[in-house]
Image (cartoon, rainbow, N blue to C red; front, side, top):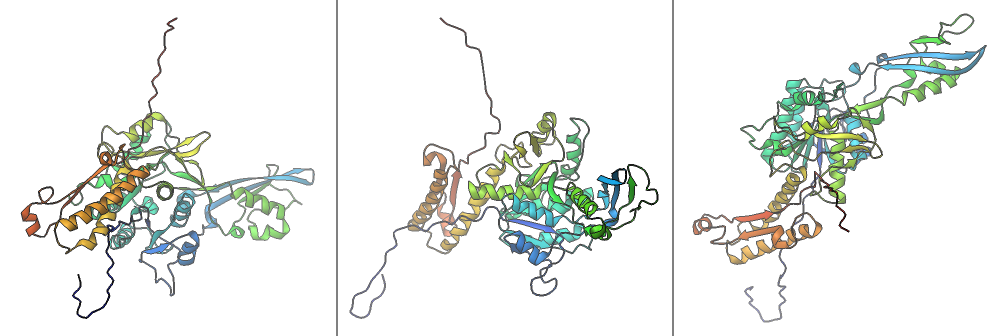
Length: 485
């Protein structure tokens, strides 16, 4: 009670409700990569600066559009179909030199992220399109992400352009950052979009991407803080060309070289045909729409994480979800391959498969962390739910630092945490028919603390949660019932 000194009427408001816990955002990805520009007010003022954006409009405003492909990497053969002297149509053969196409895919990856449910994210531009993709540059960008509290998901689609050793080093760095900070989760791609010819060969190809990733001394439980997805995705996005600069490589009429007085259009740029041969121009332009960009799946999966967290909650497994803006998975994963990817009895590292399912589209059919044989941290949603709860409670407990370490404080803390977990149980995040089966909160002298703990200023709280786990295997058991009468 205040020390009143003069006569009068005083009002005191008595607080009877415990403080509350605000749940932290569970899905805020951070992308590291290369962009056309990195400008807000002056040129390159956003270079190597973790920058939050909320849409592709923001991305284009600050970081520009996609990389423009070189027309020299296109071979365009056109055959004009004629009946007498009348043109009846065209056929075009287009070959893209994909090995020399732009390696800078961050623009398309972020677009795929937003298309699959993505919301706010961070972009760390480490260079422009004229720069080469290097491990040192990418790791510098990753280190910058480690200095801020906002991101909860780490990914880098352009890391697949690194050599195998550098690729494994970067993925190891992502996992170690997530494990050391304990507030984020890494989504990892495989190294190359392998195209195996027979079932059973995928496992070996994927192994080249994950064998170099391990628990380390710096982060002994790193594998539980990341997940790997396979294969790559053929998206609905097209390569970006300055279309009018593309030239016809070879021009034939009814399969034969033009004979005078026919015009040989070999070497003609599209710009020259725009007004003189508009039907050919429009035909070729339409044919280029059939050539789609293939992207690693991490960006799409980051969008899935965000979408599920927003619609249901972080406790829901990010699986059995169809992907948007995706034509198909680049590899059809056979059951024999998925068995080894999902439960690897040699390495213990799980890889989540993305399948082409008729009638359902391209569907994510895996929800395991890299530590797929660990009963505690096998599932992505369990690991991410604990991350979210730990950070939420940690932030709320800041108000109790230097409060009296006595029973009234313990009661407030226990009530605050129990109220928070009760809401999670009611939403379906925790298993159990009653709250006491779903969670517990222990705090107090003789329970979680000794007299020495109190003397040394330690307030210790024990929290247990029974997180709901996904029904990964649904087993239907049928048997014949004999007629009894």
